[in-house]
Each structure stands twice: as structure tokens, then as C-alpha cells.
Image 1 (spheres, rainbow, N blue to C red):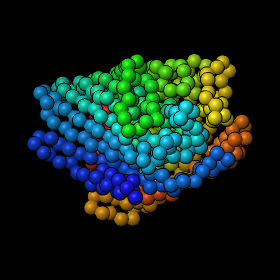
Image 2 (cartoon, rainbow, N blue to C red):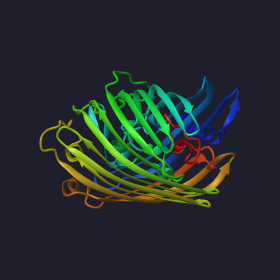
Image 3 (cartoon, rainbow, N blue to C red):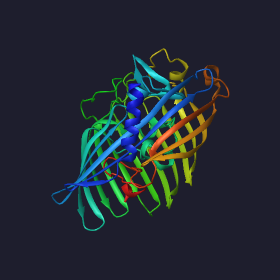
Image 4 (cartoon, one colour):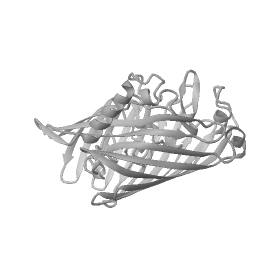
Length: 401
């Protein structure tokens, strides 16, 4: 009962808080909460009830020649999707109780971001920014799935999450950014090791990894990025450095209270003995009280981790890597509004293309499905879509301009 009350409070705060100006501070909040019935198909699947959720608070204040932004992002998933997380077949990443997490998406930490950004304008269209904090986002990958308008109605993380955007929660991030018209260039240093299984604390350690990212905004609807990063031994149980490369393009159009959004991304992770690739395409279209969303992924997985989840995988020559494909289609219907909180009911279904080896463990034709209640902002105004640590968004595509 206590966790349910926390969820309701989180959703009310996240969805209802408007932007306010108090003593020269401009404050805004946003968030999303899914109460999800989750059925994962196949031999490794399971059926459960979990909640995926996040809440973000930002405050802006003039400071010297520029503007200071403080940001904090939280999640109650350590309570509502406790370790090893919610079931998601073919998902890999992070560790729990001395084993790699498999067929589950790990819960996000209680503290997902605690950061500050100081932005100094240079002329009318340029600026320089310095950002950092004990937990923040490295300059690597597209906007994380939690802040993509194209993924706004989908309760689950992509299978390719660890290729594209897992560094949206990194320890000890220091980042600089230069905006010059339609182009932005970022560089960051951070701790490469991914968050540990203790979800309520702050991880600390040496800043041993780095990344660079370039943004291009050729028009009001488009955001394009390319990035590269070196991560020092990010996996707790799997020794070895990683080099991540990816690129993405996002399109967003708003008409009144309706919107359409599309993201396409390609990426790879190079390890000592293997290279894995991924393609992601997702879209959401909201019209009236209805939202339709879809996601297509074709991603390579380390097959041995999924075949033998009870054995800690050790990298070796001749690594087995196989392609997994997944297609998701879903719908959400807004059914009520309480104050500024919009309540929706939705569901989706996912079909998979499974390689021969994993058909033995997961089945040849697994099908997964979700049914959920979604709480969030009823209006588009104030949503923190396309938000990154050094470019705070305050609704629509503003964060990328």
C-alpha cells in the first residue's frame, strides 16, 4: 500500500506542476507513470505487475552573464520494479547478485540525475555551457528513451537501450557544450562503470571515460546527432573496455493538442572480442484522445549470456553474436483528466524474430503483451521532451533550439 501511495503522489507531482516564477527562479516539473500488466512470452517469459516511472524537476535562475539550471530526476522503480527489474525477454545489461541480468530490464536508480548547467549566451544564436553533477548524462547517444516524444507512450525500454542510451545515467559527469546556430558540439568525461544493484545511493569513482557528440538542427522539426564514446569497463562482471558509436535523426511536429514524432537510430558497441550493432525505429502519433505508437528493432545480442544466464560470461575469441528482431504496436486512449493529470489506458503487443540457437531457450515464436494505466501531463506544454543534461527542454522541441 505504501508503494502505491508513493506512485500516486509521484504522478500527481510530475504531471500537475506548472512552470512557476519565484524570486527570479523559473521552476518546471514533468514525469510519467505506467502501472503495467506485463506478459512476456516464450519459454523464458513471465507474467507480472510492475510500474515504470520517472519524475524530473528543473529550476532556472539568472547567474552573472548567463543562466543557471538545476535539474533532478528520480524514479521509484527500485520499489515498483525491484531487482532484477521488469521482465523483458532478450534484454541484457547490468548485474544483480553476482550474475548478469538477462531477460529483464533493470530498474532505474532512485537518483537518475542531480546536475547543474551554466549557459552563457554569445550573440543572438550562440552560447557556451558547462554542466556537471554526481549523477548525470554523458554526451553520448540520442535523447534517452524516457525523454523521446517518439517513445512517450511506450512503457518499456528498447532492447537496444544499452547500445544507444544507457549512459543517460552516469556517475560524476563533467560536460561542456558549444551552440553555434544550427550546430552544437559537446564533450564529456564520466565514470564508465554502469550503476550497481544498490539503487538508493550515489555511485562514485574515477572519471575514466569520455565521449563527444554533435547535434544538427536543419529545421524546426528535425534533430540529428552523431556521437562516439570510450567506456572503461562499464560492465561489472564482464572485463573489458567498450567503444560506442551511433547516429540518430528525430522528427517532431505539433498541431494544437496533437503531435507526431519519429526517431531512427543506428549504433554499435565494439568490445575486445565482439562487435554488436543495432537499428531502432519508433514513432508515436497523438490525435484527439488517442495515441498510436510503434517500435521496430533489429539488434545483436551476446548469445552466450542469454543461453547460460546462471554462468558469469567471460569474454573470449569467437564470441557468439546473433540478431534479434522485435516489432511492437500499441495504442493508448485518454479517458480522464484530473487537474493537469491525464489518465490513459493502453496496451501493446510485440512479435520477435529469433535466431536458431535462442529458439531452444526462448521459443521459436514468442509473443509479449502489455496492458497499462498511464498517468502524465494532460497538455503538451511543459513536457520535458528532447531534454538532455546540457540542453534542458521545457516542452516540445524547445530543448534542442
